[in-house]
Image 1 (cartoon, rainbow, N blue to C red):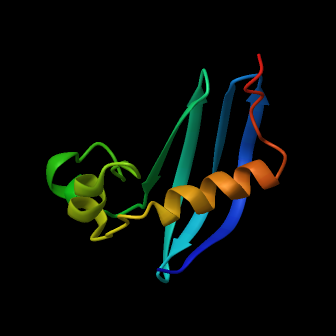
Image 2 (cartoon, one colour; image 1 turned 90 degrees about the vertical axis):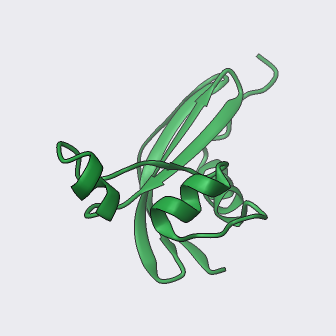
Length: 106
């Protein structure tokens, strides 16, 4: 699986909380990502506009979020199999490398 961070914007960190958003390319397909950390627990979601599920089931939204830790979400929404959490780790590492690492000692 090829995963490449395209850009990050809107990043912030405050002790054990943080947020980051940007774009990531997964196997040649571009997605938006949203990373949220609350009290040291991180969740990352990906989405892309013009998802077929948003057209049929959520017509008021142009995208549907898929949790990177939910294999069923990833497969059903975006036909991605990421059993080793490569995408999650790549995004998390890039956010930390950019200086948005949380302080677990607080």
